[in-house]
Length: 199
Image (cartoon, helix red, strand yellow):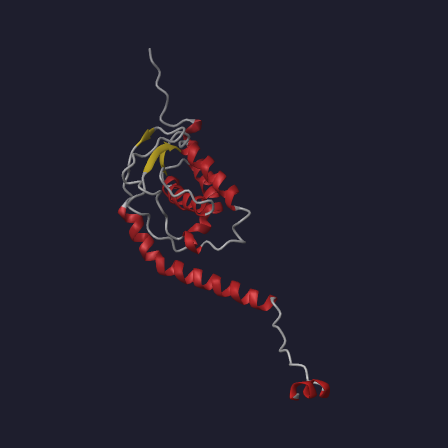
């Protein structure tokens, strides 16, 4: 006689251990931008995963999402059509997200990331097959869903406004901190200097 396990078990609250997700396989290898781009794509996955996670996993995903939510305040361009994805599992995505945060931590307040607002593919990526990443379940090219792109376009003006506000505040703080140079008065020529000039 076979006894079937009930549909709910103590592990049901954590359902996502081996849930398949996709990660980019051909992002441009940029030291700073690459880490930021991967966080942008990971944050999109966190939002989707929270909708299918068990109750306890939702809390854990929310903590991760809180750490990387700052990327939603930037006015990123929609992902380019040349971007390719490989399928991997959730644990790999979370590990890579942690690595990207560690890589960005020393630079996040000291660098200007304005050149990173457009995700870039590696050169000639359209002619190359996507490489298999370690731990990948299967290499597949997936198209980005249209719904998030529409939402991104709607949020673009808000993001630009927030970015402009942040820049203005940063500029004002910098201006207050740096003392203004005093006007320098040219030295008054001495009578001896005037005599030398006349001769």
